[in-house]
Length: 330
Image 1 (cartoon, rainbow, N blue to C red):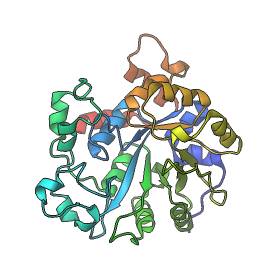
Image 2 (tube, rainbow, N blue to C red):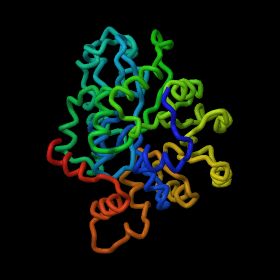
Image 3 (tube, helix red, strand yellow):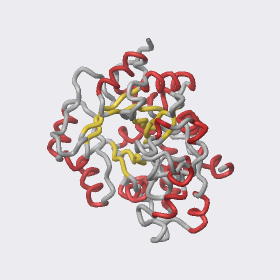
C-alpha cells in the first residue's frame, strides 16, 4: 500500500496545485459540478472543456459502470434523461445503464437532449450560441479513462464521485476499479475521490492512501446532516449548502476540516459562502461564481476577465499553457 504524508501542506503543494494556490491566497475554489453543465451537456468532455475555459479550479464527475465492467462518466441510474436511449433502444425501459454493454452505450447521443430541453435556459439566454448547441448533438460517451487523461493533459484537477450502483451491479467493486485506473494512469496528484458512502472512502484509503478523499454529506436532504467521520484522514468535507450555517462552517474549520458546499447556483448564496471562508464551492454555473472570486490581482482595471484569471493562475504556479494547447486542438 502506498502511504500519503499526513501533513496538509504537502497535499496542498503536491496533490492539487490549483487547490493549494486557492487555499494559500484565500481564494475559494471554483468547482464545476459535472463540468460546466449549465453551458454544456453534463458529464461530457464538452462540459469539461467549458469549465476549463472559464477558469474553474477543478471539475466534478460521477462514475458509472457498464454491464461488461467499463467505468464511464454518468449521473442517473437511467439513461433516459441525458441520452437518446429511449429512441435507440425503445424496448429496454427503464434504460438502467447497468444493463447496457459498453458497445451499446457507445451507440447513444449524450448531447442532443441538452439542445432540445435547454435545462438551464442558457441557450435561450444566448449564453450558448446556436453554433455551440449544434456541436453538442452527437456527443459521445465519456469514459472515466478519457476524463482522467484529459485532466492530466491540461494539468488540471478532478473530483471523482463514487456513487452507489444499480442492480445487477450493486456489488461491483467500483472503488477498487477506480483506484486501479488512477494508479495505472499515474494521476493520483490530479484526483480527489468523494462519496456519501464512507465505507467506500475507507476502501480507497486502504488500497492507496496517496489518493485524497472527501466526505459528501446532506443526502437525502430530509435527514440530519452527517458530520465528518473522525476515523478517516479527509482532504475535504462537502455538505449540501442549504444544510450548513456560517457558524457550522467556522466550527468545522476550527476542527481542521476543509469545507466545500454543493451545489450553489445563486450568486447571493455564493457570496455568503465566500464571505464565510469556505475553501470551495460546487456549482453548475462556474461562470457566475468566477467574478465573485476577486483577490487583488483579479481586480486590475483594464484587463479582460479571462486575462485576469490567467494572470492569477500564473501567479499561483498553475499551468495555463494548457488552455492555449486546448484552443489549438479542440
